[in-house]
Image (cartoon, rainbow, N blue to C red; front, side, top):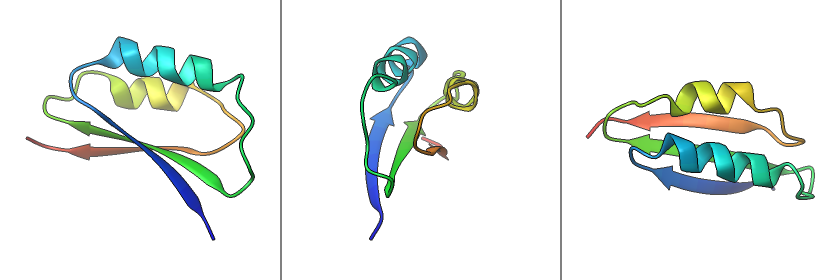
Length: 65
């Protein structure tokens, strides 16, 4: 069974970058995936998600406002 950590964000790319940077020091089970869901104006969060390499997959989803 897969487990997802869902992180919503709205116009806060610097906070997402800081969060992902801090998650590098965490240990996750192999069945975990992180989903960043951006709502509202796209402000660079997708690029931030692509630039991070973690031990678990980071998935970016966009929901327009």
